[in-house]
Every structure is written in C-alpha cells, then in structure tokens.
Image (tube, rainbow, N blue to C red):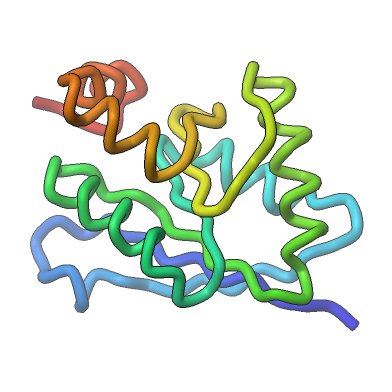
Length: 137
C-alpha cells in the first residue's frame, strides 16, 4: 500500500496566501527519491506532520519575510520512511538528526522551529535566505 505526501507550493506572489496554495500529491516509494527531489528543487521547504501547528508558525514567519516556502505534509503511515530519507539528505548536507517540523534551505537541513526563530531574532536568517535565492531584496 502506497501512502501519499502532499506538498503545497506558494509561488504566485500576486494572490492572497489562501489562493496561492496548489497541493501536489507525491506517491512515496521505498527509496524515497521523490522526497529527495522535492527537497533539492526548492530553495526553502518546510516539512512537517499534516496539520502541525509548529509547521504553520514556521511557514507564517517565512511568508512574513517574503519567502514562499514549499510545505510538505507527511501522513503518519509514511513518517518513518520519510524521516529516514530526510536524515540521509541531512547527512550529505552536513545536517544531523531530523525532527519535525524540519526546514531545508538550499537543499540542506537548516533545523526546526527553534533554529529558524533563533536565526531570525539574531538577524542571521535574512542573509541566509538571500544567499540561497529565496529572497531578492
């Protein structure tokens, strides 16, 4: 039985947030290559459990800064498989253990809500986002 992972992308800057969401359903396979592809294709991606409030907070913070992150929501039955693949991506990118919500910036594991908030408060987040092309300011 294959599960699905949904991904909401916000690329249309001229519409309101609710109108710009376009869900994308991905069929996960045993090797997790589609998860890797989604992480590598997006400058910023927020990955969390379906309906996670912390995922929503990270997304809203990034939207407030002018970044349109892709949001990957994981179903419970595929969580272990996806986390395993995310850890493999994180190890190659210099990251470590993945906890949800996970934020990938430039294809590398950036961290969770705590790291995003800490770098935002210290003023380091915007330069990092500019460096990977998520902000054009």
